[in-house]
Length: 327
Image 1: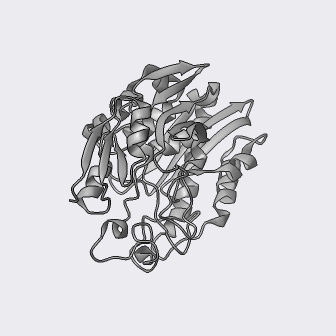
Image 2: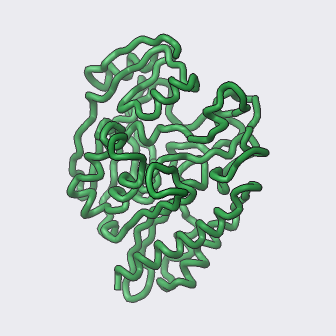
């Protein structure tokens, strides 16, 4: 492990000043960053501890403002989250283990990096995300868990966060603080698709810090859920996951939010499927057709073509479940 300095920030502005130094990285729970440091994927010159900052959950006009340092367990167990945004509680609980959720923070969860084996293999595999220009080992290698949407010839990795998928479905915003001031970015725009530069994973500017995530009011988000399909029942990343909320009145879809995990470089907001459903019947046939429309652009690899049908079936099943609850 490369030697590094350590600073515990007393406030956000102090954190941003320290984070602007060359080679600095913010650390919260450290559940992903420390692993990457052990594997020599990440080699920060300095760690800026931000665990003492932004650790509250506040009500805002029917929604919630969640500090970036809030632990995942605290978020999942919050009364308002459990009752008004159950999709978020279920997504958080689906991730990792209880011990990791007790340590991991909201901000860190959003910024965790891919679990692609080629990304972690620093001694034997090419990876454009880790070493730009070296190639993508997964393209011709083992790619069963990799992307079917939004990928490129430079990278086919997927984003591992469950929480981020739920937040994408809820139209959450991310509050940022940098040397140039504060700004707000929609969560669906926080992460980049790989294109020719998969090493650029987010729109964060150098030294910019996530301070909070804001979840807007959405009355029908009470009827929401998260389903994660994986190889084993616990401590496994998604092959496919679906976060959805559905508003059905008299058999007609009045509102719908759908986001997908395990299929792209970022949480994938299924806007095509949503557009197909609005104003139409809440039926299995309509749900299946909407899922098909969303997946029309899917490009499978030699090991993961099964993900297309798995995603289609999971979307349909989740929406059927929510529609049934509305009757």
